[in-house]
Image (cartoon, rainbow, N blue to C red; front, side):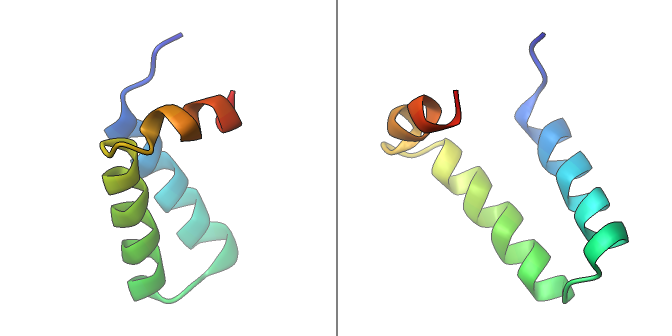
Length: 51
């Protein structure tokens, strides 16, 4: 099943805020950082780690 990256980030962010209650800036930094890493030259290396 192929899930769009934006939908995954939205779901993870929503669940993280509801369950853990971190500061809003930390959520923004993690989501933006993950999105930028997914589109970087490190993406193939991260894909092998995740799979």
